[in-house]
Amino acid sequence: MRTDKAHKKTETAAIVDRPIVLVGLMGAGKTTVGRRLAARLGLPFVDADAEIEKAAGRTISEIFEDFGEKEFRKGERRVIARLLRGKPLVLATGGGAYMDPKTRERVRRLAISVWLKADVKLLAKRTAKRDTRPLLRTGDPLRILEKLAAERYPVYAEADVTVESGGGPHEQVVARILDALKERTDQNGTNRKEKADDHERA
Ligand code: S3P
Image (cartoon, rainbow, N blue to C red; front, side, top):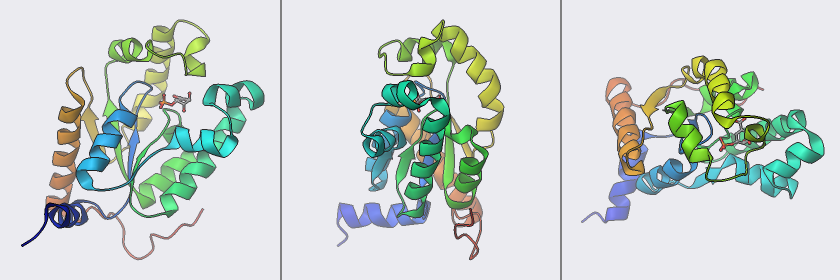
């Protein structure tokens, strides 16, 4: 008889054979949803921002203050490249990560990307709970989020899967992602997009 764990493994292998990368604006729920999605798939969960903080020995705010956004972006690109070279995982990325062309190309080749799309007013409400995001401290957070949405949504739209991350429970968002991944599997027989030449080129 198959154990639950073995069953979960089989299901995961059928759905994903590569990292799942969550993208979207600040407050879209990438970390919370990502953690739950990873648990459902029996995969490790990693938060890219937390990895950057670990590597730098500083918080994101401190990195922005001490080195500036440009250096933060370099570190972000490096950390994500390293994580994508490893075993399958669920990776939550910071809102600006997917805007970097090199990161986007890497994600396209090596991972399945999922955009958690949400209404900007909801994002403003959610992000108001914590003061850890340097970009939202430079003016009115709602206006900043609106501007970022205008710049970024057309790029986030390149993700393999788009899922609405509204005001409902996070489990609902997880279920939507699993459905979308299964649908892709049904269509393609696999969630792989490319074949043998998938190695790192950058
Ligand atoms: C940023 C989003 C943040 C963090 C940094 C910059 C952005 O991550 O990486 O403050 O450019 O949108 P979250 O999206 O996890 O808040």
